[in-house]
Length: 624
Image (cartoon, rainbow, N blue to C red):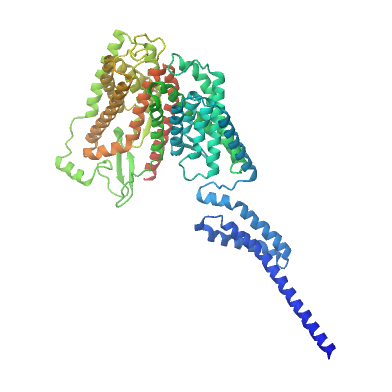
């Protein structure tokens, strides 16, 4: 009996052990089989919440397809599934960055070491270098850099942005020395861009600090420190070392950024090399404005920075401004068709066309036109052409008979006006504008002096006074417009005489209002106020003439034409007037060499408004 119970208990024990071992084996097999799925769910937590469930379901379906050939092979299934899930876990941050547009902060170890090295080097440079500059200047330029870096006024090149902070950094290179320039660049760590992760803030501040330090060291090695802003021929002595410092700054900046992009596998060498030229040009263009800020700092102080950068901000804002002028559609799509004389006609597709009127001419306007019988007053464009022609003849005769004052200055401004006229921009509605020519001509009309070199001791502002009369300004502007239009005339294109006459009339009004003010001996601050007032009034005069011409041509209500004109051209007017004031100030404070330096930011503004015209022209084409 004892033997029987022993055998029975032994059998039960063996059976129980077998059952437990089998259960444990199945448990381990099930757990191991669930491990790749657990890794998939972990990878899903690194994705945006709104797309997480869909992507995880898609990944699980792909995992099942990968594991199907290994059915019945648990170890093989574990190895293959784990490899697949770990790959997705590694690339999940990159997938999330592509879905959200935000670069992931999950950097590989080598990228973290690189960031740490750059940040540590910047900290050592700032901590071991004495700041010999005035702290108010450091604080002012640091605040300016922070505002520029936090704004959206950037030139975008793939993953790299070229911001207006380049200008503030390069001004610090000239005014503050290596430690001050590094400190100004380090303020990028407290940028107000909310999308930046802490590691990006640290890296941006460090790379700007190292770029500014290296550029300032190169500048000091080549520049004679005895030539300070405000001295005669300062610009001639500083422009060479500044160009070297500018190239160093942009090169170091791009190399440091390229390093983190390569180490974090966000870009390849081929992609970086393909766009390096555009990035270099954008950085050099924005950086040249730093020299203007430094040159004007001695005359108008901290106000020189926003005055120099404002045209670039306006130009970038004009590009980024959404096109809210959508054509109303009723009974068919509405198309914008260029009309003669610089107007825009609107035609309704699929409907009978009547005499074409602009989009701002409403049904109420048309009813009034029918009651008035389309009464057409005198042609204001023709009257303006007659007045301007007489003014040009008078100014040319006066300048030729009396001899031009300071002919080298007239020749330089005339050449810049010709260049601007050659690079005219065609805005939507077939309207041609010339921002560089207008800014140069208005700057010549507002010119106070031509630099401190050779200035008499009793000179009111310490500069050689500009001696051109208002009539000479008109003659030089007319000659520059004519020379700049000759290539187009030879090519068979008729220049827009009415628009050229309007621009010349406004320049003549500016010259006739401002040039007599110079004999009053006003101080710098009051002269700058008068410049701004005259420039603003010239904007309103140009707008009023354009509205009157458009109103007569389109037979529309004045308030609608005025609203359309302001909405279409306010940014262009503002940037052109501020550029004109800057041309006059820079040439007065630093001499004729400043006119050549200022051509670079003028070309950047021209490029921005040309892009603005292309974008809005494309929008008009798409609405057809």
